[in-house]
Picture 1: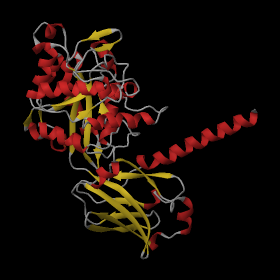
Picture 2: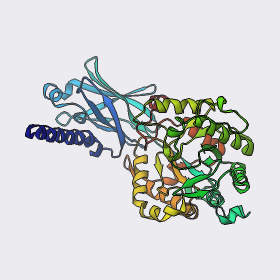
Picture 3: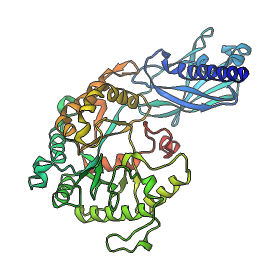
Picture 4: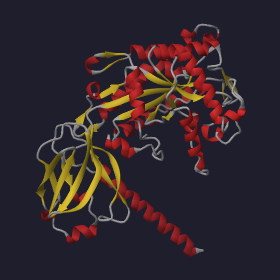
Length: 438
């Protein structure tokens, strides 16, 4: 018994040491400043396990690259720095790094990168390529930000009584339309994607009317009329926050919207059919994007579920959209007070997204939440403030010039179409390599 405990203790110690080794490169400076994120690499030349290489952000400054950060101990002890050369391969360019100090294994790029893209760092010994770090260098000059809202349409008593101008969703639209951004306030107005509930929702035993009501349908049409993208959240017999798409795909199909049950493979397909049909009728467009309630599209205990959900999405031409950062407002006013306490967490969320190496970021909130609707201007200003605090390759901020909110239907649509990887969902395999190669 004592022996087993000692083995468990030793295993935990090694896990701690491993994590420390993986995280170390991310906190070390690379000379020109600004480690923007980390990329996992696998290199049998360096070690048998996965290593983490820094993503270096360049903004008109030379790159200083420490080879010792990436080489393991055995390799360093048997190698001489001056025998090796390092090059950066970027698009059609091959830029050689100059050795600064053999003792410290430091190399510097003689001229700066000023454009955005992925590059490989390649280590040579003589004419032989020893190591190629694929997609390590991420050069970001412009961050595209797409705002998204869930659980709408937001209906309060005034909206249900006929005054939809008091709806949290309409308040959200007004705040978006009037928000000033861009370099020196050169732009006014932001467009967003709204993921819609076409039928009633239930949360903590409270029933929330949605797109099945006359007011809800009017609001959905108004959101689309103002140039925003409409996406699918849920519909049909969904009815409750407890019903994620991972659950609905395992439940039997049912008849909906004039279609018999045998038309669908499962309840999720029926739910989606009702929602897609409703949104097409109200907006004149078939929705392209879907976000599952509670973000539930897979089940770790049942690996087959993700494939079934993906097949249901594919039937209606829907692309899954998750998030890189989300404001912790929950869906409804019941937990608005909690959101106030979570500003610090949200700021950490934003910082992680900015430092992830992604330049096409999706931020999620809830237009059903009255607190979010009323505070949206301050929330958007906070995004810019947090951007200003981040050190990008020795350059802080310039949010007005580098942080670009999507402000047209086409830009929101195209940003979501191009989205492959989501910072908050590292387990989602959406084709990261495909994005990197674009």
